[in-house]
Image (cartoon, rainbow, N blue to C red; front, side, top):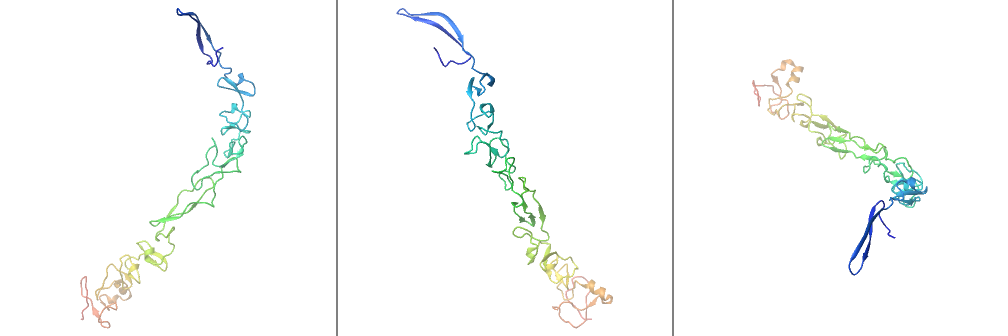
Length: 287
């Protein structure tokens, strides 16, 4: 008897006789092997399934499988026969020590279960070993974006939204302040703490004063010149130059061109002087 022949295959044979003279061949015959014992599960017993054209015993829970029909439970989950459908996002049937029993998973979902939202990020979820239907996610107690400040623009700190995401980045301008270590400087100690168009006034950054505005020091003025207690367009250091004439005329219209030198550095204090006509006057002269 010939064994291990392929199913559903035609074979040819004949009788061969041999003596000292030679070989003689008889009539050629043929036969076809039967097809497999089964083609579908219904061809097998109830506790069997059809695999590779033969009926095989169904697997018990915890044994390896690749399809539901291979299992007595008819549930093939995570590569093993399982006692339940075990289709929760955080359920698994291949948990070590519990193979074949649907068990809450720990860490990332197993097998074909969808991954948790935000996996790999600070807000990413994971299975906590208790909740079966879905992942557990960090809530607002977890910071997902640290505060930062660069080039006078601060990025606001953010916390997780409880669904696997970090809120969109929010920024704000520090103007008129500069950046501190991670946030805007709410106050200032020196002008260096403020932007270029501001100055530090009593711990608060204020816009630089425009020309003609009262001042007490040059660093308060956009022009960089505080003269006669107002912001001036130039250094205005001539003995008979001034930057506060408009204010003086408002107080005394008759003092149009006759005035006292206004800064202590000017000589001849105590005498009345008249300004020469024309721009750029740098000295006084007596009538």
